[in-house]
Length: 147
Image (cartoon, rainbow, N blue to C red; front, side):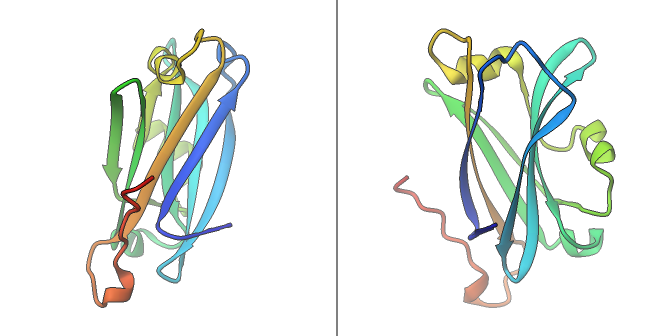
């Protein structure tokens, strides 16, 4: 469980040539009195191996629309940024994945971001969650600009 509106995770895999249809990591966040779940996984998209990260809201779709999130991955002076609305946990994992509603990173780009000899996946995914309709100053998320 993680408290706070910003996050910074590293995903490491020793053999990125193997892409299983499996979730690598689920991280639960508690913020604004609500729960969110960050998914990160590898799967085949057609013939291409990809990595995907997306956020789900533990509530219904109408409530989920009150929040937004961003995900960022990058290195070597390059970055990809995804911004969207979390999907409801009531949508199946497969439905979210198959809709491609998240940050999708092709394997070659992921290996470029990993640096080194491209034989090990080392991705750093950062992000933040914010409330779309601010009702009080307590709901404001100020990202840490120093990290």
